[in-house]
Image (cartoon, rainbow, N blue to C red; front, top):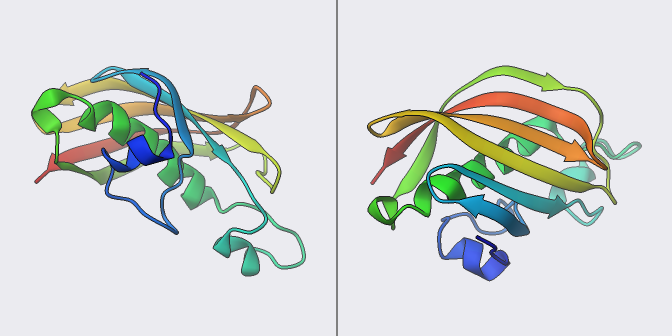
Length: 142
């Protein structure tokens, strides 16, 4: 599975300024997805986080990871047209700063699903080095 930004919008409801995935590079519906986000100084969050030293907020990196996981979930035929909500975030670790010019390599593997609720193992890297990892719980809704 490879998707450009327009194809991602056919699956996810997110739009500017909250579409945080530029491209899906690989994936298998219901199993995993990998994608990228090109971090640009022109993004809104850098007006205030932090004006003197631009750093991408960790919560936005977690959201980007969740969006990649949502593509894996919503690509399943039975979930077409549905929406995915956060159910929880466990063991999030922020290991390095993400700054303008970085390309975030995003991956979310679905490790458990019971009905509409599931868990994804998520990792964000920059140049192959882990920047953030977390366990994301989700709920598929209408």
